[in-house]
Every structure is written in structure tokens, then in C-alpha cells.
Image (cartoon, rainbow, N blue to C red; front, side, top):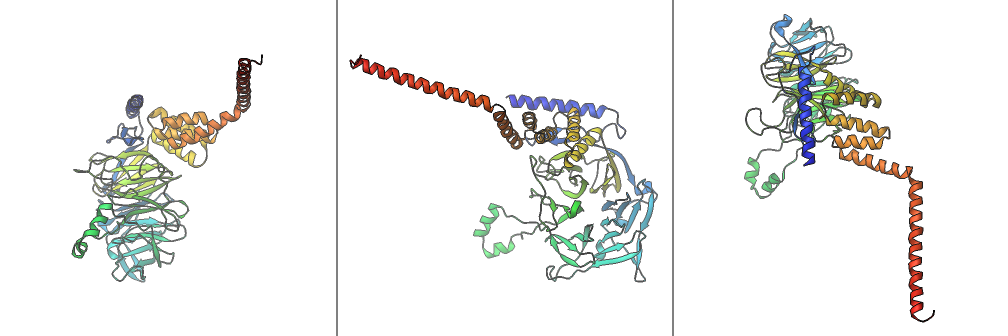
Amino acid sequence: MHAYKRRLKRYCIALISAALLCSAPSAVAAKAPYESYTYNYYEEAVPAPDAFLPDRSISGVDLGIGGFVSPQDIFVSSEGKIYIADTGNHRIVVLNEDWTVDRIFSNYSMDGTEQTFNMPSGITVNKAGDLYIADTENKRIVVLSPEGEWIKTIENPQSEVLGASFSFVPLKLAVDDAGRVFVTSRGAYEGILQFDESGEFIGYVGTIQVRRNFVDYLWRLIATDAQKNQMALYIPTEFSNIDMGEKGFVYATNIDPGSSTPIKRLNPSGEDVLKRYGYFDVKGDIRYRSMGVNGGPSKLVDIKYQGNGMYSVLDSLRGRIFTYDHEGNLLYIYGGIGTQVGTFSTPVAIEKLGNQHIVLDQGKETITLFSPTSYGSAINDAVTAHYNGDDEASVAKWREVLRLNANYDIAYIGIGKSLLYAKENKEAMEHFKLGMDRKNYSVAFKRYRKEVLQEHFGTILTIGTTTVIVFAGYRWSKSWRKRRKEQHEAGFY
């Protein structure tokens, strides 16, 4: 009953905090066209202040280049240039940081022959500014210089691993600092294709493991050969998108309704090393309708590494963006499906420009810019400070978050961890309790117990020794009186 009252109180405080924050003046927007929320320890969706608010929406017409047609990808380079795969128009549009048109690539010259793109659906740029374009329906990857001069083409990879029937249809791609190219290809269920800096295929990474459930296993035991042949093959799902993180780690998403791990962080060996230390699975929405419009688990179509261990994933089913920290804690959720600015029709890609998030919407054929609120900025700053080892700054920012949302469990946990590192174990216990972090609470409790024992060791030893002496004296006195009584009764006295 007490736990219920505490949860109800915190829920009400969160509602009031969210209302106050939404009603406060903002340089971005007065109110979001969607309801922001997060999940608590009990996997309940609870209201939360808006972490990001829509700034504006930009179309090809606004840029003076005609409307986009079914755009599929967007990328922001380290210099701040914005690259758009305008798929239906068979072109790559390059914008400056101030959203003016820099140039448009519709064709290029290769060995004296003019070439055109055919439904390009993926774009990335390396540190030198070279463009890597997934020229999907031409079944090749084209690499161009910043000026549009042809450098090389990657197509028709040959390997015994690929098989004779393999068809290379690149969809999305990423490039690391060593020049290796990671590619998702249509029908490539074995994993992400990897090419070296010269364009040679060197193998798959991140193969998705397929697990049968117990019912399927029993059915195959009793099924006839004909029934087994008619049964659906257990084929793993394809990766939907990829992004490069720090130190050669590849962040990837796949669309698998039955998977609890649709987000992966692949090390150079291809192993999934994503940390999942939060309350629940790292997979977007935890609670959702199973049937009906927008029913089912999140359909994650893109991922963006934000830096400092944070990454955001885009759910095309309900138009939401989920951001996590490096330990797998869900930080905030925003976005939705709709017609207003800030909502989407068919979102396909997410990127970062400075402190803004930008989302490409295939359905509306627009780009929407989102700017962080004071609440979102405080969360990002707190996570960044903790990731970089600045616990003092992290605690200050987490306390700022709690002033805006008293129901934010991760803030209590973040403060608790900083206090734990500072050996303030009792205070850490209190914050871990508020954050429902039982594991770290146990660690803080053991340390606090040890601390108390060490601090009062002399007193405890004195009391213990005195108790032993008194008890021993009492036992001796009792025994002595008993013997005297027995002797008296026996007539010795």
C-alpha cells in the first residue's frame, strides 16, 4: 500500500512537472504535437517533460530544388554538410549547415562514360569528404570525391561465402576511419557485408542468430517429411540500418517482431557488445497494443550514434525516437505519427546536426528539425559528464533534471553512482532506493555496513568483550552457587 502511494505521488508530480515545462516559454515551440513519456521500473509508461521540440520542417520546394520524391537516407558530415539520398529523383542533394543548397549530384563520369544513379537509397561520407552512395537499383556502391569526380565502384562481390545465387543490392552503408565499408544488402540474411579500403569483400559481420521456440521444436519432432518441407524456413532478418560509433564499433538495427535485441553494437570482431543494464530490453516501446492500427513492437529503421555513449533509434511504426545511454538506460522518447510539424508519416532516417536531431520523412518528403529543451539538454549534459568521468558536474545536472521531473528514476541512479564513487555510501543507498536500483543498493549497503563496522570497531569490540566477561562471570557465579547448594544439602556445611 505504501509503495502504491509513493508511485501515485511521484506520478502526480511528474504530471505537474510536465505541464509546467510545456507551458513555459520556449524558443523552439510552445507545445509539442505529441505526448512525451518514459517507462518506470514497473515497465509502466509515465508522462515526462518534452526532451526535444520541433523547430521547423523543410521540403525540397522550400530549398528551391523541387520536391523530394521518396527520399530514403540523410547524413551529416563532420563539417556540417547535409547529404540527402533523394531516391525517387535519382540524385544526391548536398546542403550547407545553414540549409542552403551546395550542389546536386545526378550523374558522374566514369572512365569517360557518363553514369547516372538509379534509386540511390543510402549515403555516407568519410572524413576526407568522399561520398559513398548505395546506388541500389544499379546494384553497386559509387564513391565520389567532394567535387563529384568518380573514385571507384564496388559491385558484384565474389566469394565462396556469398554463394552462386547472391545478388548485391546495397541499401545502407557506413565507413570507418580505416576505409572499411559496411553494407546492408537486400536479401543478405547472413549479416552486414564488409569490404576493405580497396573494395574487396572480406566477409560478413554481426550475423543474427535465429532461435526456435519450444512449440516449433516439438512440432518438428512429430511432423512428417512432407510437413517439414512445407514449413517456413527459419531465416534470420536483415539489418535495417547501420551507423559508425567510436573506435570502429558499428551500431545496427534489425526489424524482427520477436527479437528482444533489435539493436546491436558490433566490435571489430563482429560480436554484439551492446550493454543492456537498464530495467528492460533495449528495443523501443515496452508496452504496446498487439493488434490494430500501429499495433505491435517498434519497427526500428535507423540508428544514430550521438556521441558520449548515447545513441538514438527511429521507430517508423509509431514515429518515435528513443535515446539510450551507454549502459542501455532509456533516457527519453519523443515524436509521433500525424500531420503536424514534429510528427511523421513514414520516417526513414535520423541524423544529428550540432545539438539538433533531424528526421527524414519519406511519406511527407520533408526534413524535420528538433531542438533540445532545457530538460533534454540537462539529461544529455548529465550523461556526457558521467561518461567522461566528471561526477561533480553529472550530479549537478541530474539534480537539475529532478527539478523538472521528480519521477525520473535514472537521475536518482546517476546521483547514487556518483555518491558511491565518492564513498558516500549512505546517501548513495537513499538515491538507489528512490531509483529502484536494487543491485547498486546492495553494493552501497554492503559498503556502508563495512564502513559502520570499521568506524565503531573499538566500541563494538569493547561491548563484545565486556558482554563475554559479564556472561562468563554470571555463568561462573551461577555454577558456584549451585555447587555450594549441593554441598550444603549433602551436609558438608
